[in-house]
Amino acid sequence: MSPSAELKVLIVDDDQTIRSTLAEIVSAWGYRTFAAASLAETFATVERERPDAVLLDVKLPDGSGISILKELKKRSPELVIIVVTGYGAHNDAFEAGLRQAYGYVTKPIDQIQLRTMLDESLKLVRLERSRSEALHDERRQRAGEAKRGRPQGLTNAPLGNLILAAMKLLGLSYKDIVLESDRLARLNNNSDMRIGKSTLGNIISGSIRQPGTAKLDALRIILNLSRADMDAAIGLQPERQFNEQLEVNHARTHELPIDAVTRQRRIKMPILRDDAKLEDTQFLDGAVRRWAHIEVEYLSSFYPPHLSYVVIGNDDRNASPIVPPGSRVLVNKLLTNVQPAENVSFYERELFYVMTPNGLTCMYAELVQGNRIVLIPHPGSGNLREEFNRDQITIIGQVIGVLYPAH
Image (cartoon, rainbow, N blue to C red; front, top):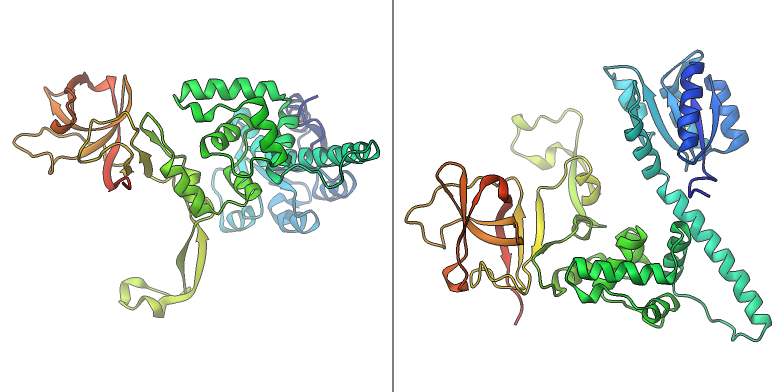
């Protein structure tokens, strides 16, 4: 059975051909489908079938689909609404109403885009149902074991329940987790990512209360879990989790996942008055209506962050002693332009984060002969410079900040 088999999707469109075609496509993705041709039918079907998602056309015989978004969310707050529109231009009413929806797709519908949006929006619904089922099964099992003399009060840890629910959702066994963690350990050259069967059992039971960061990363990747859910399950505060990510030892240079940086972090932003004109005043306080605290992760959804955090691996000495192994560097991915360099000291040169045929590293770079780049290690590293064609390497970004390892 597909993980989506019990999830319901309501398709709303006044065109019979579109309704039937979409129903066939969405059903093939593993969802149970219903159809409606008007606003009235939509409300009736939502009340009767309680769908998990609605694909809502804008132009309907008895009104605009946009006009009922607020009412639909009021009746069913957890309902995922994806607007389907054939209009090329969107007016203010459309934009205002769309805030109640998860997103929108345009006609002709891109099936890949729609499926991605639908699967992503319903991922949490599937996970929550799987958790509930796992907890229900666990309670029944505990009740049965208690009758056979099992000690009372023996339960899995919150992280264990999260892991079991994800394993059930994905159809994975203990052996699958062990084998996949071994593959990840080899791929990342990090033996700490390997999880034995007994270790997995101890994590689930809570005997291991605080698994290492590498093992948590392995479980997160294998089970497709969010870092926020795992942090909450083990009671790990965002700041501490981020620090552990920075301090974990790796042989290779690597970039930290962005959610380790942004997750649950908030910044203070001004909400300006409607009549505020910043070009006419130098006093910001007078133009501010109120201050709001906004999560960094939410802002990054509008504009993908160009700053990233990178940990210099224990085996990467190309920038040492300026940036020794174990350092944490801040990289600006907008700065990728490599210039010729003549008579410039290593304290004046730009240091770049680079993908080479041998892996990721931080090195100095110099443009030569038009289309060739020389990667230059610091003289103190003892390593040799190498020359590449421009298409053989990728300049990911320039190092703009360094935090040295504690000794």
